Amino acid sequence: MRRAALLIILLLAGCSIAGHDDVDGTTTVTFRLWDEEVATAYAQSFSVFARDHPGITVDVQVVPWADYWTKLPADVVAGTTADIFWTNSSNLGLYADNGKLLPVDDTGEWTKSVVELYTRGGKLWGVPQLWDSIALYYNKDLVTAAGVDPAALSWDPSLPSDRFRAALRRLTVDSAGKHPGEAGFNPQRITTYGFNAALDQQAILWDFVGSNGGVWQSGDAFTFAGEPRTAQAVQYVVDLINKDHVAPSAADTNTRGDKALQLFTQGRIALFQSGPYHLRAVHDGAGFRWGIAPLIQGPAGRVSVVHGVAAVASARTRHPAATREVLKWIGSAAGQRPIAAGGYAFPAVTSVQPVFVDHWRRQGVDPQPFLDAAGGATFPAPVGPRVGAGATAYAPVLEQVFLGQLGVADGLRQAQAAGNEAMRG
Image 1: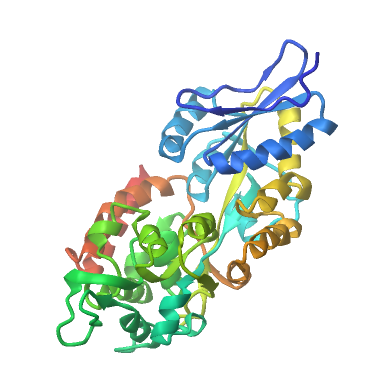
Image 2 (image 1 turned 120 degrees about the vertical axis):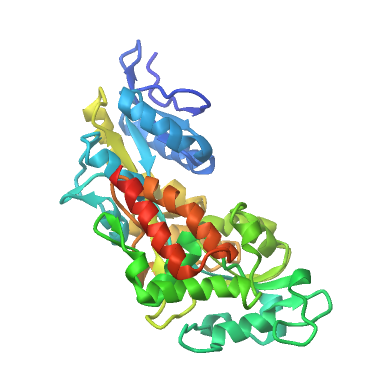
């Protein structure tokens, strides 16, 4: 009996299994990703795919993020990776430049910025799957009490006290009811913070750099140390933590990436700058009224990082024809509709994005600011064949900067040197 509609979801802790031919003649194409929730949407998608492709079964393999980037390189080298697998822009170049991937046709109605992330050497190497931009979650009760309009906030590092910092001081309060700048304010006993300033490059750092007109990378090299506007932006964010005392300590946020999210859902951070990847956590965890506002405006405007995930095909797949059929499907509106309909992520296919918006509006949430951010000025996430190694190398230096243990100028120079050395291999 043919297994046309069979879909196996594997929660892997070990090695991946490459595509194979089953005993009944069905071709199995393996597909690896790191998000178990989105895997549920793919299960729905591939059940529809199977109706028109009775000779192809898709075997979805979920490898948790914590293990994903250690298992993938070894499997790619050994030729045992999945036929199709998720990647991010930080790791694309490593595989595209070394002949490990099949190029794909740019024939989809995909979000342009995600297509650009996965185009290298004049070729598109991945089928865009989903994307995220950055906006501002806010606690309606806290901003109302403080008289703060989250949609009208702007920052400027050239001013001793700009609108954003003034608002954050009103939103930050210690256990005695004192605000930063008031006599008796105790930064060691803060009960509510104004903002989630932290070493979160996608949600915080690169957005501030971009909205100040700074840069992070040129070509395949980091260039942030030589850019005054970049240094200004980094100094501004660091000061929000260590000087203005309107954000949680870097001692907590450097080592706990979910700390700010937890504080926001607990009602202890008023303004939480982040992406749609936290929509479900905020919706399920916040016990207060909340909303989403546009990204904070800087001297160069509202500039958001837009990042995306693509599905790439292994050049060593034993089933290139079947693999291309699956790629074609997951790049189509019908193939991505379950991702949008379940509210998991913004799909890369532009025509299906309203389905995602409608899902959340039915929950009383308007995600339009994320769409506006993606359609406005954007800041590129770093790319390159070894940019992941570079970011890993400079991270400990930037952690010292955010802790106040190393000055911004010296820290950026040391971080850039460490990052570029690691990228050179």
